[in-house]
Length: 358
Ligand code: PMP
Image (cartoon, rainbow, N blue to C red):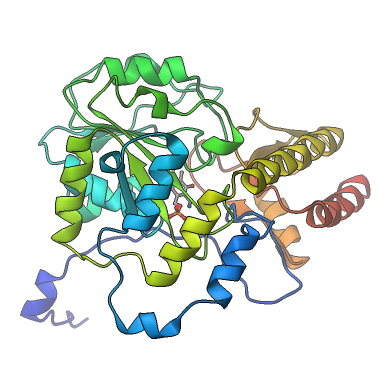
């Protein structure tokens, strides 16, 4: 066999195994419960501002400081403007945070089962990492983080397990690691409990990252943000301006401002979603599923007799998309996003019929 000729420039290509996002089927009649999107529309002000947008303003570059949105986020969370960094979804914020803070020769730490983007950024930036195992119940073992490291990232609530760890567990890890930056990825925190935000003035090594994609129903707009002490935020901005000054587009800035201003719509939406989650838990139990208590807009379920992969496949054949990860320890689980009441009714109509006729 002839060996394939590799051109010199090919040897210099950065080779990475990319993160694989959930499928985005475009057909209209699909029940899409696979990427943790919110089933409700964004706040009414978002539609208004986009419809009335002055498109002539698009001739100009957007404000590189994203000032209007930074100010509203600071107001909402009662922090200073200099404590807020905004990016193109929390994936962008996290990618910038890795580049900014994880520059040690020591490995960074994150759990073995967590957001599958974390190791991808490590490979991209060539950051060494270790993945301490979650315990049998998928709970964080805080003592595993009592060792020398180049940084820590923890999703709380965790994905895909949905488990929320108490703020005292998080504080314990931050307090044991004052020599490195600890990032708490709170993409799902609004469906859970207390945020680590209350700790940012006490610990200058703590960065809290959140998103508009889940609790504010704006995954399509791509808005994420980080909060921490002013030094961390300045460092993040310095890296951002060295990479791409104009990150958020004009429409996203205006829409983001409207979304965060509407506190009542935000609260009501979360309560509605938690109500549907409670009903789903009851139905799943009745059908023989098991799952940890969820602090997120999804449930991490396993069935006592039917293999997860099989269920994933039959659901998909019936136009119901959930997420399946063929990974060690979790290959018999499905991650099911909480959809609208109508979507969940259809899911359970199918499951009832499928499981009870087996
Ligand atoms: N962190 C976690 C734990 C997630 O599950 C997600 C969603 N895929 C993100 C961050 C990124 O979300 P976004 O970029 O939409 O803000």
